[in-house]
Amino acid sequence: MVDMSPTFPPGHAQQVKPMGLLMTELTALPEIGPVTACQLSEVGIADAKTLREVGAREAFARIREKVDPGACIQMLTGLECAVRGIHARDLSPEDKSDLRDWFRALDKK
Image (tube, rainbow, N blue to C red; front, side):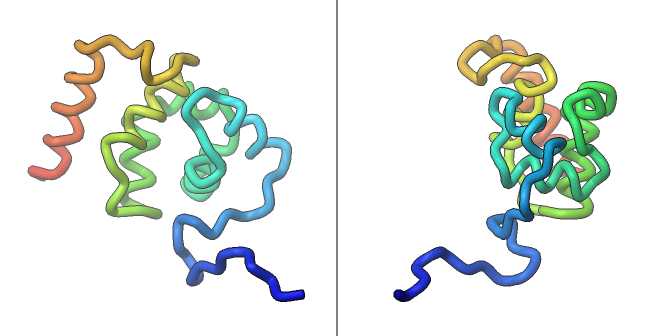
């Protein structure tokens, strides 16, 4: 039988490490999937408590600096939702606008 599972080059965001209990805790948060959970772990954020303490913006900045320079506004929004324990649809238009402004300011630095 031929293995049809996808393969990714080393370091690629889709190359997800085996998930332990802490990774499972992160993926239990709204808007956090296994790839984001893996990236969070790579920047020292291994559980929901730490994510809440660090905050979405700092977590995003760490990921962008150390793991994925192309991390996008959707990831930032997802991290903010995870910190708050809500889904993206429940984030207010004002909060979405604030996140967009902060994200755009990053690109100007």
